[in-house]
Length: 66
Image 1 (cartoon, rainbow, N blue to C red):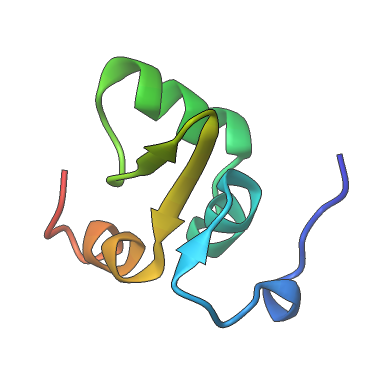
Image 2: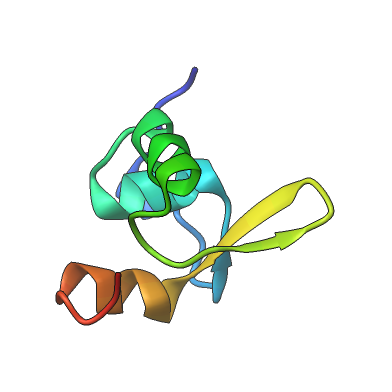
């Protein structure tokens, strides 16, 4: 897997699991584990695609979200 640099994260609202993990300084595997046990930041699914909203990641970092 290629490491994503913070400067490579696009300034858009919806992030992939890899982009969200880099934004949070976690591994993508940690986010997958969090999803499977019902913890971590809120996420949305469209079919098989998982996306994270940047503002919800910020809320998670600030302790405002699950």
